[in-house]
Each structure stands twice: as structure tokens, then as C-alpha cells.
Amino acid sequence: MIKSIFCEMAGIEYPIIQGAMAWIADSSLAAAVSNAGGLGIIAGANAPVDYIRDEIRKTKQLTDKPFGVNIMLLSDNAEEIAKMVCEEGVKVVTTGAGNPGKYVEMWKSHGIKVIPVVASVALAKRMERSGVDAVIAEGCESGGHVGELTTMTLVPQVVDAVSIPVIAAGGVGDGRGIAAAFMLGAVGVQVGTRFLVADECTVHENYKEKVIKAKDIDSVVTGRPTGHPVRVLRNKLTRQFQILEKEGAEVDKYEELGRGALPKAVKDGDINMGSIMAGQIAGLVCKKQNCKDMIKEMFTQADKTLEKVNSL
Image (tube, rainbow, N blue to C red):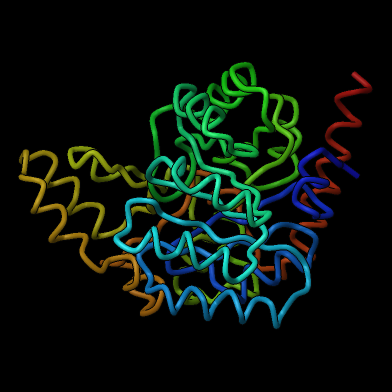
């Protein structure tokens, strides 16, 4: 079975992090992934501090394994959440949308591993200088907010640029993707889209079915003119976004159209006007499973893939 220094660092069995999917990655999913040997993550997003604290405590009741919290650094309450994870004894913090530098010393003094998501070599270098423990190099194949570089091009360049461990994300949905990530120099992977259809994922069933039925060309990036592009599955909402782009609409038009679209999909199951965030790998996701079977299947395939490569 694939092992790496990341397993020892995070205290986990398999070198896999569950993606921090806003409105989706809650205590149910995080605990299930951690119990299955991976590193479950609770998504902070723009949620109230008390809600995130409650999810942390629920997760502790569901698992005695390590898990983490993702903090979106541009959120209004990022500083409160940064302090709260110390109070609650969280083991790992992943970050996005900003520089966690001013919190790193505080987190590390509480024994927290700090792993920011990066989309460029320059940002990875900056994170290393700030003292983080590892970085997640996320390619534009991933669902949700994306950068410009693909996983295939980003990961090896980040690996060459920093001396800390690199986790690969974006376009990883099975054992072949895991094997490829390790061949590129990563010591672990982050997976989001496949976990959307986990039995323990509380996203609406309509959302899950949309992912399972998706084909290889069914994802699209919207909102580029806003400076915050997002990869989602095609539907009526994405077509309206594309119309705005053709018309050269003002940014506030995009914000008005997209307001509340993610919870519409996640909670209400609106697959027409909801934002169905999912990566390009959705076309590979074809069945629902519990997290334990999902992770075991992926790493069994990864082992066989690497054995095959070694025999060539």
C-alpha cells in the first residue's frame, strides 16, 4: 500500500485529504473520511464561527482520528475561526483565498499542521517562507474556484520549487490519478468531486445524480470577468453566465445571478439554477459508495497501477 511522509505528518493511514467543499464538507463527511484512514476536512467558507465550532465537536463525537478545518482567509470572520481552531484542538488547518502567514506561528504553537492551497509556484514559495508544513497544489481541473494551471503542469513545478511536502489536487478521482500524482512528485492527493457521491456526504441526491451522470465535457468555468472563476457542471445557470460574458456585463450582474446559487444546489437540489460545483473528473465518477470502500478501492488501484509501471 502506498505510504508517504504525509501519512506520518498528519497521523493518517492513506495519503489522501478530502476536499474542503463549501456547504458540503461537514462533520458527517469529514468523520467518515478520517475513519476510513484519510484526512477529513470541515469547510469553513463563510459560515458562522459557532456553526463551525459545532461541526468540529460533532466530528470529535464521530471519530477519534485526526481531521482538519479549511479556513477561507477572505471571509469576514477568518480571524475568529483562526483562533477558534486552536481552542478546539484541531490537528490540521488548510487554507484558501489568501495568505495565512499572520496565523502560522499561533497555529504551530498549538500543534496544528498548516497546509494552504496554492495555484502557482510563486504562491507556493511564499507559503514555504511563511513556515507552513506542506502545500496543496491545485490544478484548474478541480471543482469550485480555480486557477489557470493544470495539475499536470503545476504539481511538478511546485515540487521543484519548494522543499516542503506537496499534495496534488485537481482531476484526481481514482487510483490512476493517485499514481500519477506520486509520479509527478507529490506525497499525497486531495480529492473532492468523488467524495460528493459518498454515502456519508449530505449533499442533495439531485446533486449526486448530476455528478454521476456527468460526461467528460460537462463541466465549465464561469465568472472569469469577476476575477473569481468557478468550475461547475453545465445547466441553465451556467448558460445565463455565458450570456453575461458575451454581453460584457458588469461584475455586479454576475454577483446578482450567482447569489445563493450554491446552497440552492446543495440543500434544495435545484440542478437548473443551482451552482453544481464539480471537477472535470466528474465524468469518471459512476457510483455511490461509502468512504471506506471508496478510499480502499482508489488505493488498491493505485498500487496495481504503480506495479504495472514498474514492470514496463
